[in-house]
Length: 369
Image 1 (cartoon, rainbow, N blue to C red):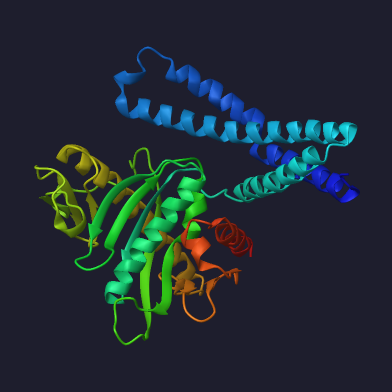
Image 2: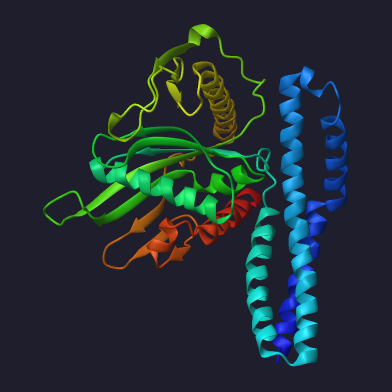
C-alpha cells in the first residue's frame, strides 16, 4: 500500500512543477508560439532566407520547450490516476509502477527546476562545443576522445540531436580536437558549465612502465547564433585555407578539397569545418562560429576591464575545473562544486546530469554574490 511518505512526495513534486510553470510563464510561451507560427506561415517568409531561418529556429525551440513542460504535466496527471487505481484495486504491481514513475518524474522535474536557473543572455540557445587535447601525449588525445564520447552519450540519453562539425584525429590514439553542435533549447546554458580544463589521472595504457599519467583536455562552449551581426570582420583579417576532409588515420572521406579553416589573424583564433558537402557551406558555418567567438571574446575583455577598474582581478580562465581518477580510488570530482561521483565509468558513459546540475547551481550562487 502506498504510504503517507509517497503521498507527500507526490504533492511536493506537483507543487515544484507548478512553480516551474510559473517561472517559465507557459502563457507567454504559448503566445510566442502563436506569433511565430503566424510569421512562419507567411507566403513571403522565404524571400528573406536569414529571417526565415531565425523565425523557424525560434519557433522550433519554443515548441520543444512547451512540449517538454506539457509532457511532464501529463505524466503527473497520469500518475495521479495510477495511484487511485492502485489504491482501489489493492494492486501491488500498480503500486510498484507508481513508485518507479514517481522516482523517474522526480529526476525529470529536478532537471526542469535547474533549467529555471538558466537566465543568462544566451542560455536558451543551442551550443557549439569544442574539445582540444592538452599536455599528455597519446593519453591526452585519447582523453579528448573519451570526453567527446561522454558528451555524445549524454546527448543520446536525452535524445538531443548532435551535429559533428569538425574532427582532427591524432596520429596515435584519439583526437587532437573536435567540434559539435547540440541545437536544442538551453543546450548552451546547460553545457556552458562544462567549459574549462579537464584532468585525467590513470595508469597509462600507452606506456610500458605502468606509471601514473596525468593528461589534460580543454572544453570550450559557445552559443549557437542565428546571426552574428554585432561583429564585422574585415576580409584582410582572415586567412582561409582549404583542405581535404579526412577521417581516422588520414583516410580521405571525399574527393574534393571542401574542408575550410579560418584563421583570425589579429587574435589567432582558428575555426575548422568539414561536415558540410561544399566548401561554401563549410566556410559559412566556420564564419558563424568565428563571429560568435569574437563576440564573446569582446564581452569577456569588457567584463575583465570593468573588474580591473573596480580593483577585483581574478585569473580563472582555463583553470582546472574537474578531475577524473581512474586508478586506486575511482572518482570524478568537480573542483568548483565539490560534487563527486564514485563510478567514473557511468560518467564517461554520459551520466553527467548530477555534475551539470551542481555546476549550474554553483554558478547561480556565484552570480548572485
